[in-house]
Image (cartoon, rainbow, N blue to C red; front, side, top):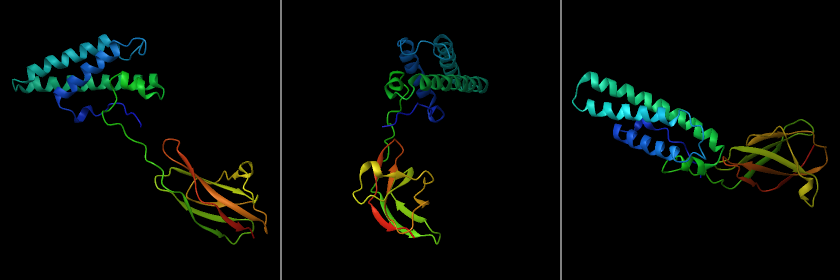
Length: 205
């Protein structure tokens, strides 16, 4: 799963913003080993939370000026929470548990999409000697790399990746006419998943 930093403050009610900010402040403040130099400082953030909470109470009277001040304090607090989110993200350096420790993980983390079956749909000639066109498909794929070998035993070390292939349709060049080549696609996903397609053979001309 991919842990996302909480950033949907604009979609929260005033009470939800206050509750979330108080919780995150408590989490970061009590975990000084993980978060030794938070930005903004926790005292600065607490002052902003207190100002926002006080202005929420004042705005309950319906006074236009009080509501305007509450909205300004809310915006200022959210800006500080975004700064703190950036700090936590840099501190986490890809470790989702640190994001969780800060209280900033969304309740429903995104799940990486599972790669589907990779299939080479066609291998055809281009009309130019030593070239082949390869077309493949794989649901949820993010990258494709064509791999070739002329070894009929398909030894693992014999496969060569084509550097110019990154899409599902790619051009394989530099082939020796009259040689039978075996072709497969190495397919990657959004979270470093990897899979291989079926293997197709074709003689270069």
